[in-house]
Length: 126
Image 1 (cartoon, rainbow, N blue to C red):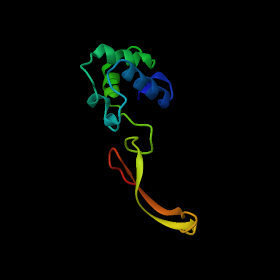
Image 2 (cartoon, rainbow, N blue to C red):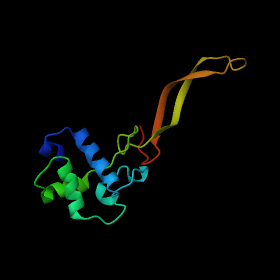
Image 3 (cartoon, one colour):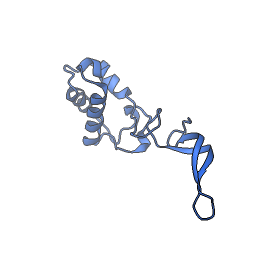
Image 4 (tube, rainbow, N blue to C red):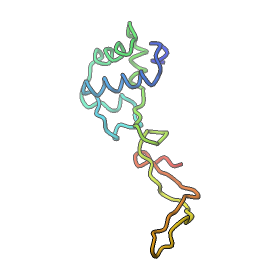
């Protein structure tokens, strides 16, 4: 909704919002915030004027309460592989086939037949 209102691409709007939130000390860039709405990630008390200035920075003027609500409901997503929260996915299970090495003189090499990955932050599995 915010990207549509200001006529910019969602990725650009998201980048501006997160950069402003971090630069103003409203949130910290930490995996503890990934997967949560902005309203649950404050590091300190904030004012309406601080949130309104972020909305103005993305190009929306005048600022109305619906934009304030929309911004505070935005989810913070990390930069890694998890589609749910952006957290880091690690391999937790799988089956592998040996493709090289004899195990005596050269180390064995394996390729995955299948792998299960789990997010280290939110527990999402693929």
